[in-house]
Image 1 (cartoon, rainbow, N blue to C red):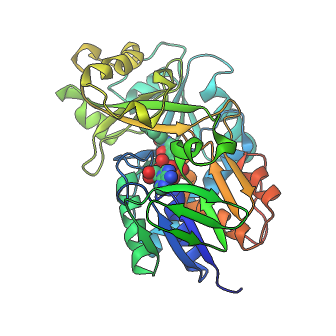
Image 2: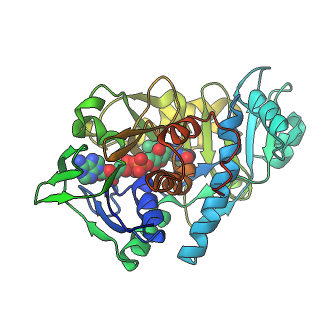
Length: 374
Ligand SMILES: Cc1cc2nc3c(=O)[nH]c(=O)nc-3n(C[C@H](O)[C@H](O)[C@H](O)COP(=O)(O)OP(=O)(O)OC[C@H]3O[C@@H](n4cnc5c(N)ncnc54)[C@H](O)[C@@H]3O)c2cc1C
């Protein structure tokens, strides 16, 4: 295949993964990023992100997680470092038909390893939790923590070392997707193809996306009481606890214990800023409190604020626009798929799958992999 010049807009996990995939295929790559590379304000930059199989009723996304694990393995080989810590994951089901219960049914349907625990089994695994008698725990030994900041730092260094031109502190002001022209604050660049992975900033870049809904998600770094710290550090990541998508990431390999809640998400925009006072953290902790032993002793240490596009479809969107592919609606779940997404996006630009196939798969509708791709 002839080498092309591929311009990538945005140096988050999706943009950098696309850049790596393009370099591996022998293309010339330019990455343009408005902030530093990586950018601490991007949705991809934080100590950790969760990878887990629990995907409710969606067999497509559940199976994509297996594909994602394979893609991470390929990245660890390239980086010569494994930025993943396997903790196992535990989702708590409190009612038939809730997210953990439907996730378990889907995992059974598509053959993903898991086991169910009763309330006593959950408390034996997680002595820091207290469970109502009817609680059931969906345990999977496979998931865990992706060290997000280490991954994007490693990816940027790998791309630079493999010949990519990384333009930091360079904002793209407009894109002519038909001509393949990108206008930055400094110059005009011409590419054979363009990957647009601009995260929450996409509405300001492409008029066709100006109406997208942006969500502010603030997560809380938490100090657990002394007597429970080792239990958290050695326990599984929590994927669902109580109503409204409450999850916890473990303090492993120097990271902090982090609580997040789908109930603590609201509409916003990066222009609103990234401040989140520690007091805000107690709004997050209170969703966990009914299930925490010694809940009153938990302290909010700091908030981490991020923004992403999330529309009501809750499905990733990858859309052709002239010579560009736009990756959007990444929501609160793309990090785990980003290495894989980069590979698929570039495979599509190289005509190994059609944009329609890519869209279908990214929307979680394609349960099986295409034969020519791993
Ligand atoms: C608090 C929080 C918790 C999350 N938890 C998880 C989780 O546990 N598991 C999981 O899988 N996912 C999780 N996610 C989601 C995941 O992190 C994101 O979906 C993913 O990181 C998005 O990556 P991206 O590359 O598309 O966007 P980003 O990482 O936001 O990158 C976009 C980049 O484009 C740059 N850019 C934008 N416009 C321009 C322009 N005009 N010119 C130049 N550069 C530009 C930006 O500066 C930015 O660096 C979470 C997200 C948040 C915010």
